[in-house]
Length: 209
Image (cartoon, rainbow, N blue to C red; front, side, top):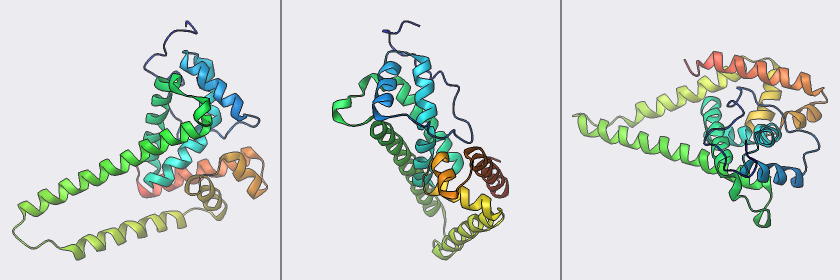
């Protein structure tokens, strides 16, 4: 690929894994800025390094906003596609590479939430207009309570070590490396607990089924 030519419209890294890799140790702000600049020139190897260094933080932020692991994966995938397409627009004089990336992820996540809310409003409007009986808000409240209870029960199904690691990684946004340090574990052990906990959580809740 010509290093000075425009980037293709598809990201070369093969999409997001269900459980992202941790931020690479030693990736400084200058390193990430250089990787972004090279990605903007169509450098696939640079984009792969950029993805590996930032995907965990991007996914963690997406989860905090959309509150759903499956939705967060889609948001992060959309964000990295946008990063690959628009990396040439990054300007280090206006902020750090991490800030630029996470701002884009946050925007995608907020757009997803707003889209879901708009869809819910449309469905509610249609439901109200097509019903001859008074709208039952009590039933909606009961349903929301049931969903919240379902999430709590799913988390309760995890082992203590899985729940602890998963909460740090996907509900508080820490990277796998940071989780390992906080729990005084090898990074590989922390990743295993997070991965197994996420798989069990999704199986229990039936996400994606």
